[in-house]
Length: 150
Image (cartoon, rainbow, N blue to C red; front, side):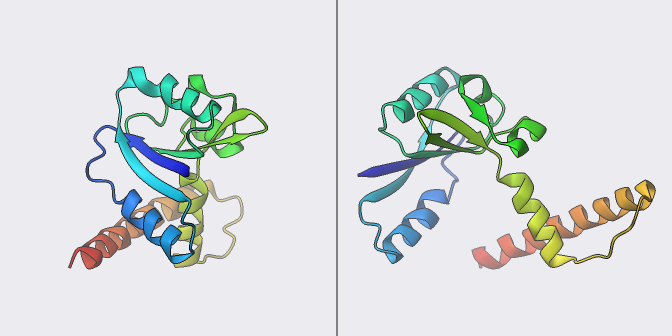
């Protein structure tokens, strides 16, 4: 059985297992399971050890551990290095690698929702545009959350 986790504290609210297990079942990945686990800071090294021993295939990391997990990892992807934040762990070539999928995911969402033309080197305009897009993305996210809970 291939086991995946989302870790955090609190974690009770996470819908990740419901979502991931749905898709695993839909695509007949019957030897996979995705669970959530509430942990404490002192348990971070144990999670990494479980991955090294191949008891866990992958782990999603949520608050408050996105930064705290970093010292236990062997490598970081470029987005994780830049943001100093990790939300996904995999074992690659016997190394536990931390990834940040939040940054590229957010950027793609903004790009898809609000395609814009190049604003050149106008940094002031870039900052104003970025703040506008963040506000709009959050507004859409709130709407999406509201729609899904109805």
